[in-house]
Image (tube, rainbow, N blue to C red; front, side, top):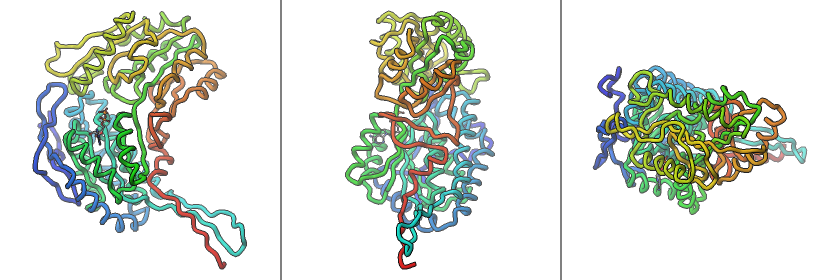
Length: 488
Ligand code: ADP
């Protein structure tokens, strides 16, 4: 699939340190999840490379932070333009290594690029403040300054957007970055790095360290232990987030964490059921259910339960599963065998505990050696099932029944996670009550998809720390300095 790129020079397989491509002393394979075939072998960088990247970033920090905000903004804007000009190629690379349908991959390129555009604009709005003096011989000011060298560790489910959402505000604020992309999807990240160079981001300001899973752990330790690295931004599992937090305690590092979710989706008796079915489908099955904001649990009020289940199952049965390069495909493969095993475990557990399959339910072996699983809906879900507690991260929708609003809210909040939540209702009083009661960082009322670049994305409880995107997304990359100026 990579033979058809318009610009084959976007296909980079080495790491980038201090403006130089680095081949590394060993390599690791990147495979196509739709076919199992090898796509490329990529530099497997390690701890010494991480140290070199941190040193390069630190050396580049001074010149980068002393550029004017407008100068940084212009460079970022150029990067945005290049990402969009190469949307087709970046989409192809993404579909090849990640599996999502090509239209969805190109959509992610636009979404990922939009963070670069947004923070190019926000670079010029990192405003300080003057405060009223407590003594007329003094003046009190608040300065905002770049935090310093930033590290980003990113997942495979959004190979571009999870990088730009961290890197763009860092660069806009005047910080250099060291990126450790996911081992399953480094090619999209490296293509974006090549475009960053073409945009004029200086050597050392943008470093990227591809690595296999063992070296990722070793690089993570170096990034956390470093006194030079002032901030770590991580998107991935809650389990790894906890490890990074613990490893960062000795250096009291600032952290942005975007971790797991267990999104509930409530459908009340007064909802527009057709609209709820559309929202449910979009929220559950995009990226084959592999996003941290994908619905994990559907709760439907008893009066509309049967209607919702019937219409939802009918909609899900229309979905086309296949290789993401094939036209009309809605759902591609899962990223790896372990992901499919987890979905199967959750489905089997639900069926053993009284669940009833109304759509899908099986692995699809007819499509070759990729990890394809049918989009699945199981009715009669109950609180003792694994899917009620654990994030499935796959195309499986369990549907629970509830009686009262309070019961639904209690069930929705009965989790250590708190990222995205959704509900459908036409009652304006209920919309406010439920929004305020849901212990989640994001609430979609009568929508199944809610992210865009200028809104705050993030979670509460064990779903993470901080917000990405929006003007809040800059906060983690600037330090506040108080200046008390006397003798006026
Ligand atoms: P997912 O569940 O989405 O695969 P992970 O949390 O396992 O997410 O991985 C997300 C990112 O974290 C990847 O870039 C991976 O290489 C990296 N990673 C995994 N384990 C560690 C670790 N112990 N230290 C540092 N990085 C890690």
